[in-house]
Length: 424
Image (cartoon, rainbow, N blue to C red; front, top):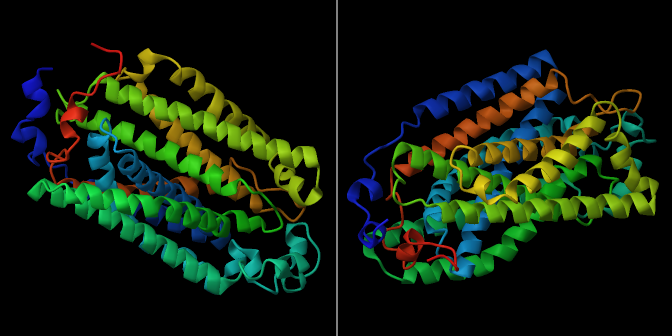
């Protein structure tokens, strides 16, 4: 690619000439949500509630990973990721719709909380989940009551999503405004907001996933749960970023802009967070299993029953070993036909990981978890597709409102001519 092509992209590449139609994504989203709602009548409200929770957690994880990567980009003043950052900024528009998609879960928490969060119902009989007595007389819950109460759940959940939405709006505003006036003050503003936003998102992300998923089995203890969720957030976001970049290249938008080194850098991050996920997950398992404390080991015991045992093995080999070995190979990371399938696989495995953490909490009268391979998986898939359609619709609507790349970003020339340190 010539210097002229790298530093002065044509109007067709930086403009909005090829505008994708978001209507189909919205239609898919609405149909998916409707099918998920059908689960309420076919399999019962508990199945619907769990499916909606899994779908919401998956897509909020993607959005949080995108937000964190945007902030990390600004903190490190990175150059290679400027093009990717613009697409992530479009995706950040999905937070406002994820807030709306959270409202059914909030309604469940107030109307029929025992469908998911038994600790919200003081009259719930713990014998239904292998315990003794009523939730209202559970000493373990009393010790956690300052955190595990419905008012805090409601207030903090809304606060966290509004914080994420607000931060997303700041980064989108700064980036799009810089396209118009080229002022470096927008870059400096984003860097300052990122410095404060990273710890804020880290804290709210951790508390939120504990409230939404970990508290389903509120007797369980883990100090690594927030970090586990963080790793899944980033891995899902990187997979999304890879697929968007390849999609734009196939459309012709990124022809001459996207090079092998951009893809290789995304692959390096995917490899790093694959190892990070394995480290966190193994450390949690090793410490809990080695300590052999019943209040902790029960969480793994029920996940080694029935077909959940095979899900556990799939996560070991599919969420770590397979992507780890594949991502070690340079040719895979720069192959535009093969690499997207790696991203799709990782995105699917992250979904299975979220199912593994949430769904076994639903137990049969004998105290065993409901099977993974059942009709309930249909409602989960429908919720994931439905909410994903809404998020894609939001992305496509935003896509047409700004330049394809941040044409006046101070690092855009470095991004377009990005190469490995030792390359000629």
